[in-house]
Image (cartoon, rainbow, N blue to C red; front, side, top):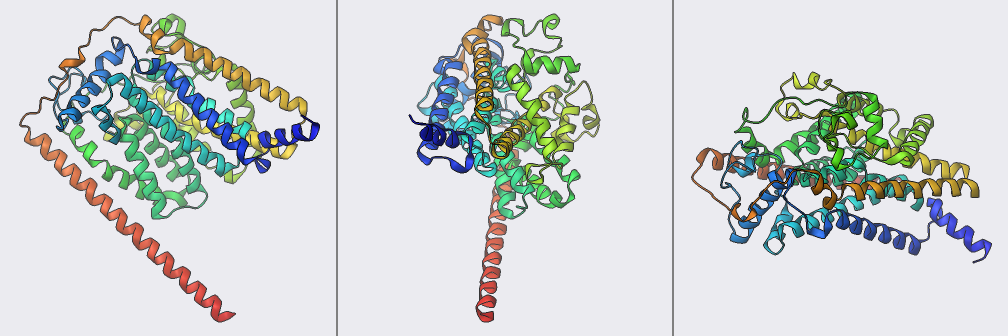
Length: 494
């Protein structure tokens, strides 16, 4: 390969303005397949040992119950007992963190383990499309996008939660679309189209059983609305519509108010624990050892691992983002909402919000989890700052070599974390918990209060959907009329 060809290849990888279309699609396809394989490896390609922690106690039994409902063509209303529903009730939909997304229909043909794999692959793929939307929005090169891909999909937060059975964390993958929508809003998109997209995304996140992720996004938007009053109205519209669309999921849990655990468990105890969460691999075997972790809860609640390379990358290019001060990259409007979530993730500071007793917000018991949303935003911002450096300073060979070496180190570090926390290793670290999935069958019975709540919730959700469609159609019609009038005026002027 001659010097000209090497330069063209380098430009296509590092310069977003000179990308080769064929190389771009090959690169993106390679990353997508790599991600699917890595998540398949992590989940043992569906052959998951369900006899430990939340796999046994919560999520495998719930999915087995859904499989029975889908197979029989019955509504998943009541479980045989409350053992898989935190001991609160036998009403399946009364728990806000159960999976009720459209893909559960696949359980008619898939085993519980295979469904979890396909479910994860599906959400991963949707999240990948969201990252691609971010790539286009910020004109990221293939090199910058590769950083974004590995840091977003393989950080310690999502891996360790999945490892202990938190399959309802699947809504995390949809954060890519949430971030894209936030930047569309900051770019001036305030139409009913944006409102609908945001509300439907939040509703879809809720349907994955990702109630916590739903709440974090709502809290972020609420703080953003206070920070930037010009986006208050569209955020208010989106928040109201999201809650109305989610009425079918919110009303049943509301019937059990007061029955759920409400003890606040807190956040990161010290900055040292937070730094350790980013840079150190704590194995599943040590995840409950408070002396080694410095944390009072299981380490999966604190794990944010991105490795030393990832931490250096985020700090260096995070500072670059601040120094660049680009409004189109979210500066300075995002600083306060992200800082607020970091603040809430420390110690007991989130008690400030819990004192308000707002039902949606007061249900968050482990505030350390909030940190992931600022981290994900920082990942995106750091990648945009990296791209800005690539475009302005035109990296010479040494800088390209060093940055590429750092990326290789990142991938190696993330691989070590994947290997440590894959389900086949995680199962060895926890006590054996017997679970019989065969007995998790539909046991529906007469329950007027519950069923009436579901009917009312469905009506509210349906009416809200119809209302948004009407508002969207009216806005489109008004826009078309206005555009037509402008064309007429221009023609008459000519």
